[in-house]
Image (cartoon, rainbow, N blue to C red; front, side):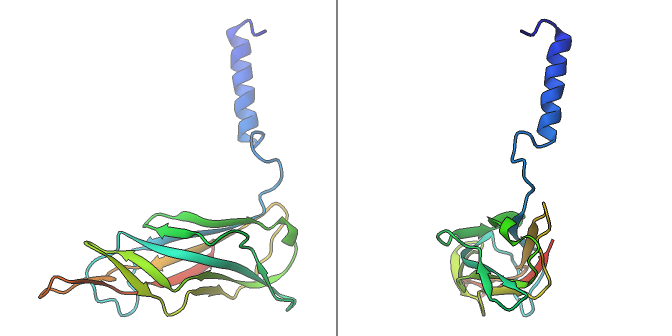
Amino acid sequence: MIKSSAQILLLFSSLLFLSACGATTSLTGSQSFVVEMYGVFEEPVGADGAFEPKWQNYLLTDVLITKSDGSGDVDLMTSDPPVVRIVDRTQIIFSADVAEYEGVAMSGLTIKFDPSIVVAGKAAEHTVILDTGDMTLAQSISVGKGQGITVLLKVKWKNTIKVDEATGEESALAPTFDISIK
């Protein structure tokens, strides 16, 4: 039984220390593959609108990593394809445990979306068809012991919402993308 305030303070300090060391979470190293996505205030080539979207919805259909030995792609997607809503803040849209690929050399990755996306403009929602739904990065990647991989997918959407001055009709243009390892 705890009898003094010093014992309570010691117990509280010990719990804080254990929590900071990860004792309340998994004790194994984090070997996860994470995809983060967000809209950025950068203008894609050809954008001639005057506004940005409120959000964009994407159907994430697949996440693949390519082995360097030529044995093919590893499909990391094990669940039904989710619809992800992208805003101007970074958010995790996918994660998977990749511990079994520790030390395996990979030559790249592909994140696949349905090319048909929904865009929220100032006054209406619009369907926009992307040139391709495949976001590919050709770069050497490996999973180290206790290390994960974070992929950053930036959606360039500045000035992709256009309003016709004569009719007031709104339209949306397709964004472009940058993919990188964080």
